[in-house]
Length: 392
Ligand SMILES: C[S@@+](CC[C@H](N)C(=O)[O-])C[C@H]1O[C@@H](n2cnc3c(N)ncnc32)[C@H](O)[C@@H]1O
Image (cartoon, protein in one colour):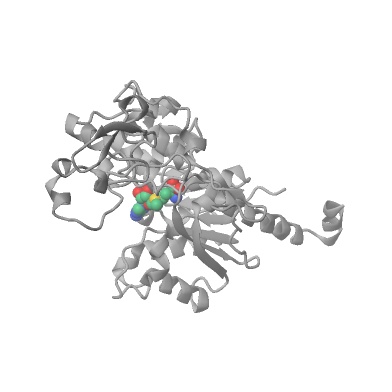
């Protein structure tokens, strides 16, 4: 078995690297300009190969040859204007990406991006580069994958592009689905990943500790239940949460509890102040999952109580309901981070790292699909006698 070397660009806290490292890829360079995210990455994979800065400031001399590059530039927008060529100043991050591909000359690259990416001018530019530009050696395969279809307890759709110069590599087939068709397994649920955690976390704060990364002291390192922190909602907020059943949201609130902004907006934004469901995967975890007004992030535990308001709305039974948002720890598990992942940063920084990550189960499925091509490619480069010996 070979150990292909890997560069992770826009590495964040390392979600994608977890999946690729688990399949035997060896990280030799990671670039990430958010210092706290880079420090989390370093706390788990080592600091020596991390550049905690702007990709544009990495010199050509610092780019090693590598077997694979993973990670894609964040998308700038979805307007129909401009961005169609690499010289557009808004395309700087793509130019940087191409520079890394040209210098490291990987056998394969993997780009992940938002699900709408295929509607962006950046995507058109990428196709053009693969057709007759800097990426013309590479065959592309792309599509939108849902993390839930790969054993992650979360519905999260991402565009994945695999570029390869060692033979076209198809996207991995789903291993899980909602209905459990064929030999696929059923979607993982919230109960599978966060059931059994303490319903009422003791602390509202991360422990008071500091660690040094890149010569700077930063909050951390935190792990496991350190991240299981509750918030301190007002009584009015608690009152609101108590009316929201699993799968419900702001439309379940009695009129007198509706904030003005929602009362004046009778349609749309249906998932705000929503409550998750135990027996489904979660909705997409975003960077502000700790704010119930941002999505369906209330804890799934709720049982209908006796009390009904004048419009027939039911409050939950307080003894059998958990009226809080999910904790950082729960969000990290839903994002498929290991229980013992090590985290660096403030509460807000860590939430951003969690919400921005590629769930490791999705990354691992992609890595597992790509990995055999490296073994075959390395075999072909061996002399015939040795190839035969290796095949046995
Ligand atoms: C979607 S997140 C990456 C998530 C990561 N792949 C993971 O799985 O955890 C994109 C990252 O790009 C970083 N980034 C954006 N512009 C950058 C730049 N110019 N140089 C380095 N990093 C940058 C952001 O800080 C962010 O962490």
